[in-house]
Length: 275
Ligand SMILES: C[S@@+](CC[C@H](N)C(=O)[O-])C[C@H]1O[C@@H](n2cnc3c(N)ncnc32)[C@H](O)[C@@H]1O
Image (cartoon, rainbow, N blue to C red):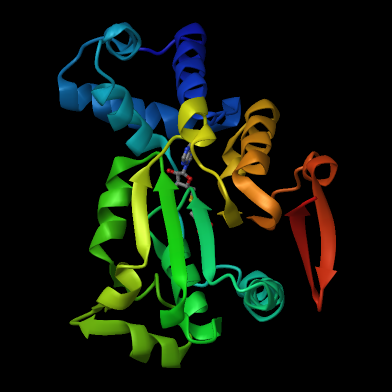
């Protein structure tokens, strides 16, 4: 059984159309390996059969299965600590101050491409630590991903020591319960985050997301091609409130971000916001 260059391209295009993720030819080994495993599991004999199944089947279950296999879900709590510190101690506090001054005690955050939940739960912990009297606030943290498996895991809130390696010790004590060699998040933090399956390439779903103060989409758009990156950034622009902030991963230099969003230095941190 061989996968021709032509058929490989067809698979890659199908995945791209569904997810926005673009697999360069250099990623061929990664894609081939997952296709082979899945084809063997299904007992199919030809790549072409699997392609037909993905392309022409009425339900999306097999496509979802493949998407689950092909997404990269690497994440951990307090990832990119300096960026989060700038967010927590400078940007967030400024936003909170402005809200308090105008009598608003509601804050909405969206972690888009949340993987197994470490990022949105980190944000929830930061809110608990930084908001004055958090119990007086309506806090909404939406966490979305295209991968059904990671959403299931995120809802469980149970993590290994690698995931929590960068959690400050006092937070580990305050918000987690140790269970043998794992860490279970307490219910206060778990209840603050609402997890939902959402594909960033689906227009209708994206249009429904509105009025966010902060969007975090870190280490997601690096897997997209420039066209889908811009499409998602345009949607995020619509989803943010005026003055709302967007956070991308450090390695994600997205030129268009400076066309759409304005850069602001707050204290020592640089943040992008909707003009
Ligand atoms: C590397 S993880 C990043 C997790 C977290 N944001 C962080 O920075 O640690 C990328 C996540 O983006 C998700 N993703 C990829 N394409 C997506 C899409 N089209 N819609 C929604 N999520 C997507 C993947 O399933 C994966 O869980």
